[in-house]
Image (cartoon, rainbow, N blue to C red):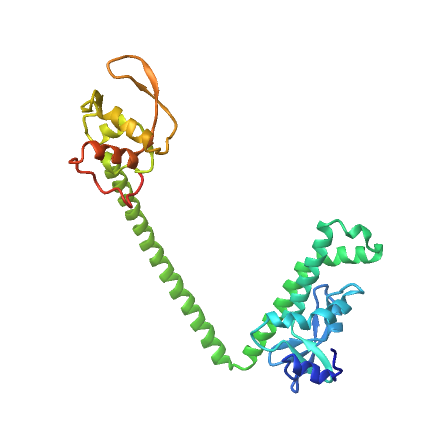
Length: 306
């Protein structure tokens, strides 16, 4: 189900646009990351170069030109702002971003091989060249972005008069000073606000700790402790011979409420200590309500834990 088409029709079928031609490009000689000279194309403050030129200035290994030719154009799909590929004198040239993206792609593939211990299977010459190149990736990328930023700045300066340049610099410095003043004032206000919030938080915590009824409804406590928190007479007889604490314990047991870890508690009228079950405060309150329905229970929904 294949159809033979020319390169132009193939590109059009995939939505490719006709490549822009650099009509006002000039040649400039720049110093590369290894103090080597390279002749590149320059147009409107942007630096362009062919795959071969980029590889030469980066001192890329012998196999990298093929890698760049296969992948540099594909990286353009991730770059949305501006034009990054063009034609200059019949030669395809690229700006730095797709070259840097291709370097990242190669470096990821190289680190994958290292992680999987596959580099031992590589040709010794290719492995040595790859290791050397991988060590320099960060340096190469930094150089490329610095190069582009420098050329853009030079292009801006070239279009401004001395007065505009001086005025523009003064405006920038004024803006920086204004931002720093605002930042200082804002920082002071935020610091004061933080202190107030901390004080309020401390006061709220104190109020909650001094009001037992507002304690965490999800926490596990004994029935006796919850009765004491709510100032209820846990020893009052409420059913048969059972006092409130005993009756609530049986209620919770029958209802299958979730238990917490046991706590040591002194038995009523005795010096003996025994393990006593713990239950969630909210479940104990339900048990209390079943025996003492007239007791007002504070609303525990949405309360902060103390």
